[in-house]
Image (cartoon, rainbow, N blue to C red):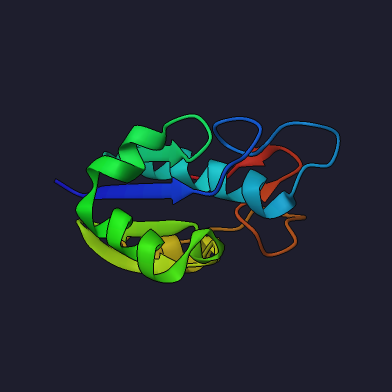
Length: 120
């Protein structure tokens, strides 16, 4: 079974898509995670502020935090292997890791999410 685990830095809400100043990368990332979930990928996402136990219970994450600190977040694991650290990967790269074709919508600026919602 395909699986992605995301260990986010402390944010105001579980996705970071909240408040008055929303980071568009986080909006796109949330959309891509939805596409992955809809495609049968198990998606687990942990926010350090809301799920600190998940960071302690995962030995790899605990070691990474001890060695690199919170500035190295997010940690993104694909099928148990650390694939990205310290950045949110582009939608195309993330989908490719799971063998899912990246599609853009008309009027889309190259990301996965356009004005009419996320592509599939």
